[in-house]
Image (cartoon, rainbow, N blue to C red; front, side, top):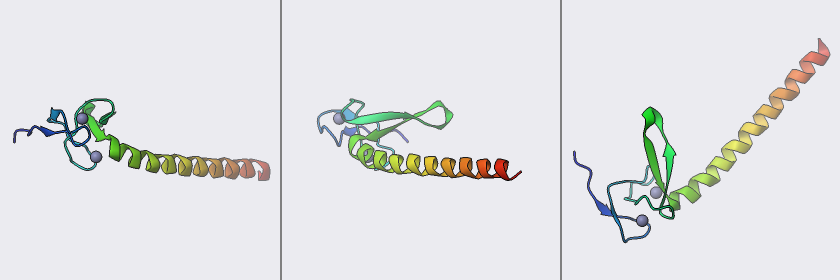
Length: 84
Ligand SMILES: [Zn+2]
Ligand SMILES: [Zn+2]
């Protein structure tokens, strides 16, 4: 299947074959329209700036959660050392 070129959903000026990985709307490679992220198998994915805002919010949550889990692990290890 050939990728179809359509109008970028962000600037609505440029025609592009790239699609946002999240919402699947066409989005051009201009910095203010999309962000490029490395993906599996050396490919890149594009995320439109609207989705980027949305996703970065989630990213923050994930990062905070991981930090918290890490902190708890550290406390647990410390306790084990003290008890040993
Ligand atoms: Zn654009
Ligand atoms: Zn999008």
